[in-house]
Image 1 (cartoon, rainbow, N blue to C red):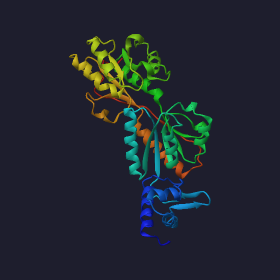
Image 2 (cartoon, rainbow, N blue to C red):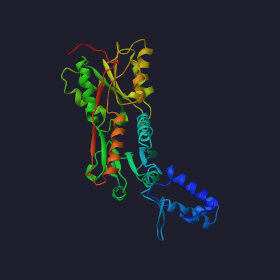
Image 3 (cartoon, rainbow, N blue to C red):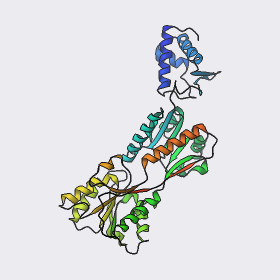
Image 4 (cartoon, rainbow, N blue to C red):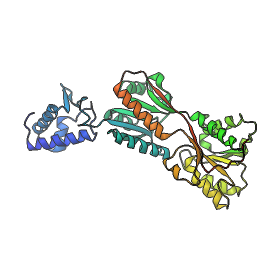
Length: 361
């Protein structure tokens, strides 16, 4: 290894640190020697000595007349592999939970997780994440079907594995992990009917009802399969006029309080974020869950295990999404030429104390 000066050794050590913490990913270009000399306020000769040392240690490779790049073969002992997690820019509790699951699993695998929030696929933050990470796991920030051909080609040719969450894209060469969300309502209604409930309500955000894949339409369609159930959807739907991606807790509390215990449903299906406000509305009117109104939850939250009464719920596990996505990414690193894979996460019903049995039907 070439002998380096004290200043050059300081720069070498700092660049090693920057590489180790993920600021320069495998295959990424190092800033030019001019930029590094300006950054560290040293001579070009000092920078050249530091770069020569990094090259000798196997951190860098030189591309003549182009520059120096972080070596693709840097060992994981010297540099953790980086997993880029792309999420839509609108923050939801579920995305926060997914980050928690993914962070824990990456820590266990000695992987470095980097998070990026984007409004569109062509946001700069997406480019930066793809450039600095060894593989990407993404909840699409917009309709993937509307992705521009130019950016689609860019993703396909990036050389970085991309695991998509929640959308089917194996036909275009991408791996995916998809929850069987279409079965959530069916599974929940099936269990509620088994407990004797025929007036099954649903709290639905009006702005989301425009999507025909929303729970509202699945709920209507599913109830029609049960002749014994009420099909008076206008009466059974608790419609929440709240802008998309804003909290519905205040709206559901106000509407339940306005009913003063005269509930048109024996059980109301709510999302995890609305459960506590629904319980509060019922109890603040002097009634109780589940004796006067049963509540069933559709969705997944980490803290839901601490809700009281203990929740009866159906979900497609976010933890399972994270686990399967990371496992798929690891397999893709080991077998880059394997055909595109799609993993289906099944829905699961968990009984609790928030739904009262009305007798078997």
